[in-house]
Image (cartoon, rainbow, N blue to C red; front, side, top):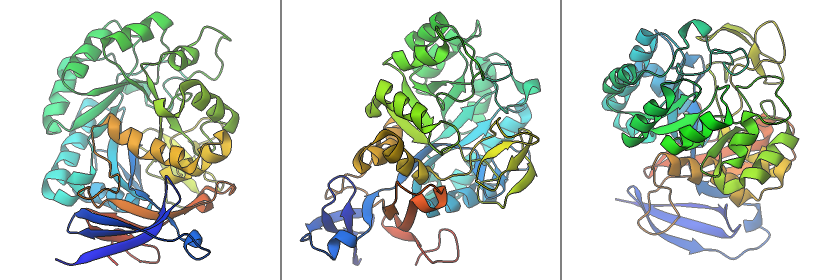
Length: 400
């Protein structure tokens, strides 16, 4: 078995290093002299982890037509974005569509071991969310319903016990008992798409809810100055906040305030990628509704320009955005998109120590770039010791 190497600057210290690995494990890290040449090297970091991926490249997880090959397609495209760990996200739909989606994802994991290792679990975002306009977002109202533990258990069985995160609203009478059961079963409970009161939020956290789904989005367009459910979630230190930092979901000033209030160690980034990510601008029929991908990369409910329907920017663009908007260091920003989401779903992160998994990427970042496509560029990705992407290759996921 040959020893392989990769050279770059550590994302956390900026120090140039040469990483040596054999098989799927790191053997040693060689520290290089910092000079004019090595200071031009790309950065080296663990692969990113995205806990909210609804689809991309025309493939949508919450679809009655989903195939195992579609799950693989999404996984391959994510590798080009530096994402080596992710949660396929199934949004609000009928019982049968959700059942088909989770069973198909399970089938994809069972028949493709490499893909199965990269999927940290399924994120079920709905249907147990608020029916109100605003908090419901683009989720179809006809399929929104109160939390039902028996229904969830059916889906979990079809998913091969892979549902790792469930997003619900705590505003229903059945919410607290559902949260208690889900948390006891090892499922991460996220609060989101809700119109809940402070007391309902606190009761949900007491029952085991621990994270917020895309805080600041899936909300009423106009809220009382105070109290409101955004302040309640920001003030609750037991909640870790997911943030979409694509430049459209949260204004930079709001992103800055959220990160200051929560502190970076109680936040994580998600992409909220939709099926239209990677497609040309235009109108598309999605599983939630008809959507439009605007030329600037904003994804909206068709017919207007304000109501969002997911995102089209990769997770790495959020790293550049929080550096610019909130003044975070590269190390802090990468941890928001790598270490902290992995910790939420219980997946280990390499620290570049001997014996750690050979799972990392080379990238360049430009926080000053206004265009999401230029702010974060992945040059190479290695998963389980296998080079799976290098910039310039034609096929997603191709070894080169």
